[in-house]
Length: 247
Length: 375
Image 1 (cartoon, rainbow over the protein chains, first blue to last red):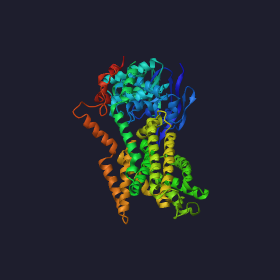
Image 2 (cartoon, chains in turn blue, orange):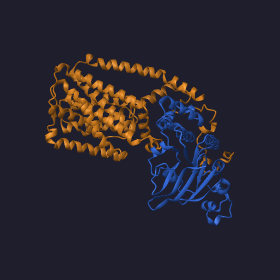
Image 3 (spheres, one colour):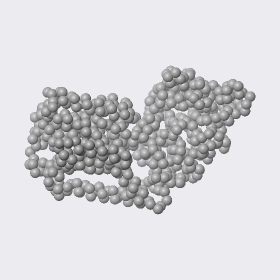
Image 4 (tube, chains in turn brown, cyan):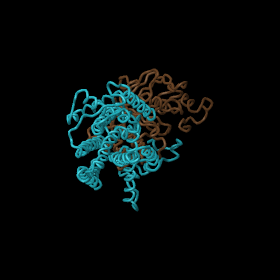
């Protein structure tokens, strides 16, 4: 398996705060990768650098060996990376269907058909005529996922897809991700919900203070001493080894 | 299959009764507008109508950029005045006389578009208040140039329009139909833009520009295209205004109240709608003109304009058309269960669990849940 998305020694600082410090991550094609770490560890900053919302001070980002470092967000999306945000960002004054069409690159009728198919897939097709601003938080999460899908990106970056939604919807979202992954989509997921991440991801990367602490399959990460230290602090290493309990 | 069913439902709802009523209303309005000078032949009345239609065209053009994108321009007088000066200067220097002067209107549009490109490339790099300040600054640059480039613009005297061979009794009627053509054309353009992918991208930029960029919208290109389109039409209408008024001076062609007036018209009618800005122009411009003519030695119209702006912002912030539409919807749905427009329907898809429609669970926010996500 080859790395579809790759960052190499990415550095990013905001004033005196070093958000990313020589951060190197590899996401293999067709996998669901997880990105975890304590608050402020640089997860969202890495998303922002990959998708062009923040400029890397140093280092490189590659998509299928094509350098996409500091490329504008619209170009990154066109190249095949779609993302969602931690706090949902939808177009509140547009209808749900219109939200879908913003990202579409198909002709008018085929765009509508594809948009409806994606809404059907995530389960909110019945709301297509409603203003997006009237949707519940969970429905907004689904809409965000749907309109990223409409352009058929190669890699999908999900920033806390299970954050702030109820258990049934978490399961629903997890099922959709599995289905898409089975169809060949590659995912990189930032999530604090450890059960969600451990149950879904093939490989997990742990960030702390802007750098990679550990990378590996969920079972290894779960018991990795460095990960526990990052989450719990060095003095707490004798406590319950499940990092999920603390997030 | 389900998507096909949903598509069919979209098609069915697209030819519903309100649309037919709206179509009928448009036909009635069009007939009324065409017949207006035949019924009200007084030059005083047609003068009001000509100005109202000129402003309907301009505010509609402004709305295509500012209303759809959310970038409030207070510098459209730059294009309006430049359109007026373009026609005046070209007619003067190229000795264009008679009705042939109308052939210069496309040139006015081209000049407006040409000014809008560098103007937009600078101003559209910033947002919100900074954008507004830049548009005001550019406006004053153009007004000062009109005052000071004497050999080109005529300085404080300005430029005069060539004589048009129309009798005084039919002069206003000719301009009425020209202005009506401009307004109708701009309304059609606005409607087409709103329905198009381009219009959708503009409205997405208004809601969340950064998010739109992340979905492949080339925001700068889209904003600039709307700015140029809006500028071109505004300049063309500025040319019509000049030929009607027969004179362009720095303080009238580059009038600081011009932009405040069109912003007020758009806000009164409904920013970002098609009918709203036109309605606002048809209400405010004749009223403003009436007050200006009636109280010649005061600033009553300006004071009332400011007061009206406050009233609109405080009590009808969304404008007449959206607020009126909301009231009508409420009246029609009174006593019925919540409608689909104000509250989304229950999901029809079997794929979505019923809990998905509920507000987010509090415990999920705290990071405890989702043990069953692991399957």
